[in-house]
Length: 111
Image (cartoon, rainbow, N blue to C red; front, side, top):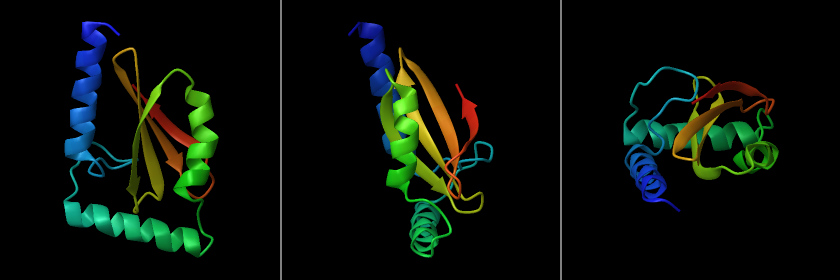
C-alpha cells in the first residue's frame, strides 16, 4: 500500500469514526446528534421486526458483492428517508451508496 493510500485510508477511517451515524442517507450534509443516531437505529430495528423493511445484513448481502475491490467502512441509517448509507473506499476515493431499506434498491451513489 502506498503512503498516499494509507493516508487516505486513515483519513477516511477517522472521518467515519468521528461521524459514524451522523450523515443522513438521502439528505444533504446535515449533522445529527448522537441521540438522533440512536433513535434512527431503534427505528430501523422496529421497522425490520414489523416486516416493513429489510435488515441491514440483508442489504449488505445484496450490495457488498457489487462493490468488489472496495473496502467497506460501514453503514448509517436515516429513519426519515428509510434508507441506509453504506460507505466504501477504493484507491483513496470514498463512495457512498444510498439504499432504500424497504426494497434494497440503490437510490443514489456518490463519489
